Amino acid sequence: YQRIHRNWIRNFIRNFIFFTIILLSCAGTISYSLVQGDKTLDQVDDMVINTHEIITEAEELSTLIESMMAAQRGYIITGNEEFLKEYELKKADVSEHIANLSELTSDNPSQGSRLTEIRNYFTDFSKMLEIRAEEITPTVNKTALNDVENIDNIKGNIIRINTSILEEEYELLNERINTLENVKDKYFSNLLLTVGIGTILLLILNGFL
Image (cartoon, rainbow, N blue to C red; front, side, top):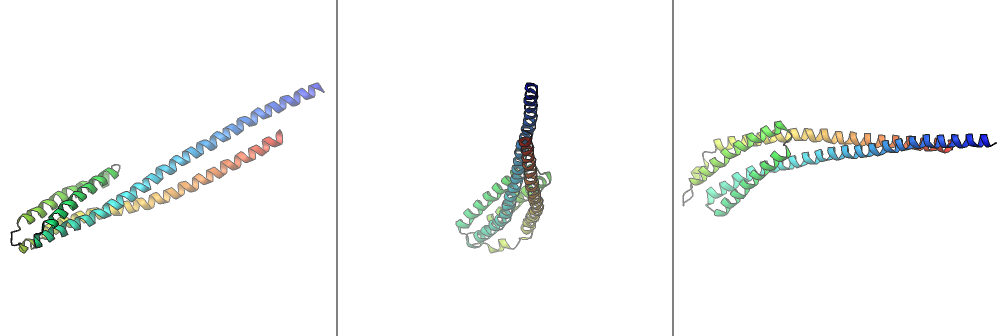
């Protein structure tokens, strides 16, 4: 009887240690899966947010370019200094948006190249607008508005390149949203699988004990 009792205790301890190791391994796997899943979700989510910010900045950039031109036109027609102040504010806003876009797209060489073009065109655009504004006389020189072809061409180039930036970012946004959904599905599938395996192991351990 004592030998049987000792064998039973030995088997009990062996099974207990064996399944404890399995359970700890399973718990470690679940924890690792959760941590990695959370990290991947955060990374993809940050990418989606980044793309949204780029789109917002780029859309506002086109509006600001038009506002700059409108403010300067108002100054030339009326001679009102308020229009000139508005022009300077819009110009500063455009520079800020270009800087923000450069920072947000620092990991994207193609977008960086487009922004370099926009920056160069914007410099020429501002110079031409300011040269035209200097031609204004105290009686208001409306003929200064006649030669707008070059200015419109530069503005068109800025808008065109900015549109290319937006098109690429909208494509990236769709891709990243799809990736985010796939990562979420995979995350929850892995979570359910590991929880299911853990539950089965607990039931088996309970049966052996």
